[in-house]
Image 1 (cartoon, rainbow, N blue to C red):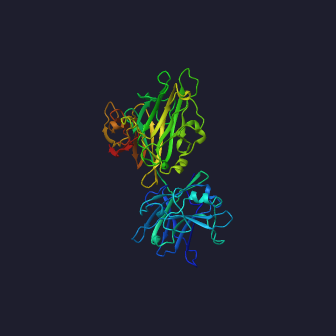
Image 2 (cartoon, rainbow, N blue to C red):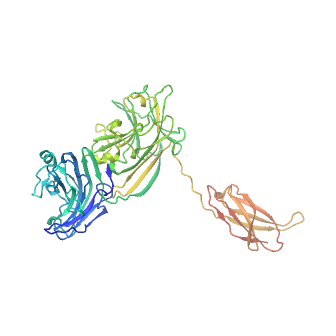
Image 3 (cartoon, helix red, strand yellow):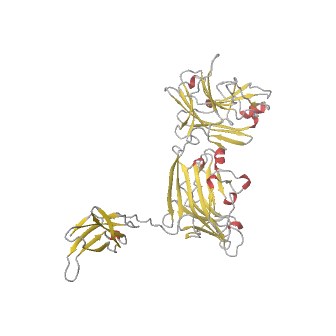
Length: 545
């Protein structure tokens, strides 16, 4: 499991002299430096000019554990000088041990990075204590014995708390900076501490680990806009022409009007496998993935009474950094909930359980658990080395394989794929993409335009055949067609709506108003309503007599 806080650890500091006293720790949780090995931050210890200063970050969570039951121990460090000069030695690790199990700490086992590899300042380095060499009760200048060898020689040895007094606990596992002239005037950071007990691993992710929401970009995938996705099909012997189409429906998809359909039939090829895959997440650490959701709809063909399983998801990952696929992680909907037929369902793969290299529900793990076992696991494109012209990509949605009856002679629909991840540079911004799968390109609606309606008025004088009237013309242009125009008459400073009409196709309308003012002026203005094609507008106020 991943523990994203330091609640199980505590700070401590003292002067390593004959009469040395406990001091105020120079420690804090910080963001970075650079990209932390896990999450966004780390735990920092600062050592000044005196080599007796000793800073400890320790836990008593493993006190009493038999040394032979420690199955994994790793941590990461970053060291840098605050005053120039030679490289500083990174934080070392100490296990306080009761070597014979009789009670009371009598031995200290030290893991010094410099005795187990080349120390480089200004970069994060990973240290494998389990596979390294320990020093017993001090630094002899070279590693002496492995943890396993010491445990074998002392089968009753247990991790022991070496409490100094009632006010100062002494957890058996300590990360220490200082107490050496090679660590004065330096800053020391630790993160990604992994402790395995009887095969059960816990990863401690130090630091504030604050992530911000970078938003989700909506993208439409259709026959003319792949958005980085490609279709592929093969059987046990050959690559095949893919049987995938973007279609309307079925039913009401979760977004938009359509989806991607994949079909399988024993009459066609019982070994057919259909894939919908992308390269755009290749190079992403598994630990950096956040949201992974997708929606499915599956149904059996006519005459097939076997309920059909929906599309599953595969991540191809490299665990050791050589760029090749070491494992395949499979998300099977049936291992994460009840599958329904002819119904849209949404699956939350980011927080679900996955099979490693196949479908073994009893061994399913979460992505967090996989990241603990393989902290640097990275999605890779899973290329066919024998035919590099073929489609690849480490994220693939799949149906079919070996003619299984629960995924054969049916139709399988996919839609609304959302994948988010934190940025590689800092790990602090979570951004995603939502892919809407549609049969045709969707044209975004044209935003309404601004209009500037004009108003013109003339007085038609009375004659033997007609009474005098005011003739008012409002012109909003063709953009205002079908909008409602309201005419207002202003009298004594008060505006009153007197008539409403709908603009014609040319954006014009004419009002006739009886002359109620005689030789005095009449004042008018008009308002044009907002529609899907135009914004609302208002004319100037005009006078006519």
